[in-house]
View 1 (cartoon, rainbow, N blue to C red):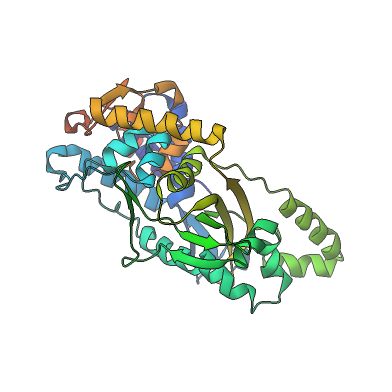
View 2: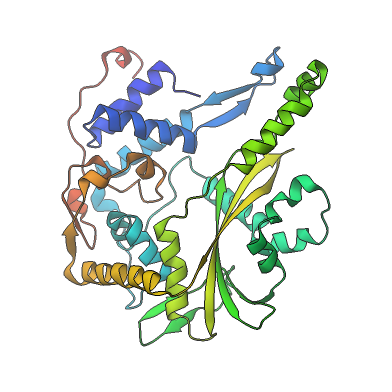
Length: 373
């Protein structure tokens, strides 16, 4: 998977125009952008079946072109018309992820990036993988290949609990807390077999399933007599898949535990579903679960970020930690289209986000592209 030489030269130029200066940052940003937006396309004319699927990074380059066009005229970016006095768990989580991302998402009427119709597709995909669907499938599917995701004891406990609230859909009621000015909607609230209430927040991660090789590979291994050995290696590789639970997701669960008073929530689960595709269908192959309660450590974490978050909104500015910028995370961020802080040129972030900061910078057009463009 890679850019063509011309695509790479043009993409590097576009990033320099948008303010990137460090060649290593440009390289890492483009690498992640390619992984996020690059796509395999089937070529029916290919005579070699091993080369029928060909990778294209065109969508990644198109996204950069769209960003350049938007940043040419920042004055035309529409502002949000309604500002509410409440805060949500998502906002607090986004602040802990990146203050610039929070500021952008609460300043502009953001649009879907050009060439990124994957958001709608992703929502449909996640709908097919949600815990509510897993609960249905667990009672009807006997194939061990698909039942692996439910081996986690916490998942078994959730699947056996009574569903009290489901937060998906436009009609899902919101919880509010007048005392803390909180409003929000978790993914689920359950009641376990002991009668205790708990909240669940689920996230979806596309992660290659080592136990899902291509049919061509399986046929080759079976012919060579190595299938059993390779399957054992795949099983071991799958078992070793690590889970790291991100702080912004942890804070989202903690926000629900602190602020929802309609049910006596005693604990919460953060669930990471790892999914892959088989025969054109998405399926979950592994689940990671983190149990959370309002112990002193977690409560201190929540209060620390809540204080910072509220101070940022009240003061309208805070220092921006340039050294902490991870351009790979920036390339995958939903607010990247509008962001200037990913370039590492700004040492302060404002709230609301300043249109004056959105601009282009001089950059020399690549000589090898002058004839084409």
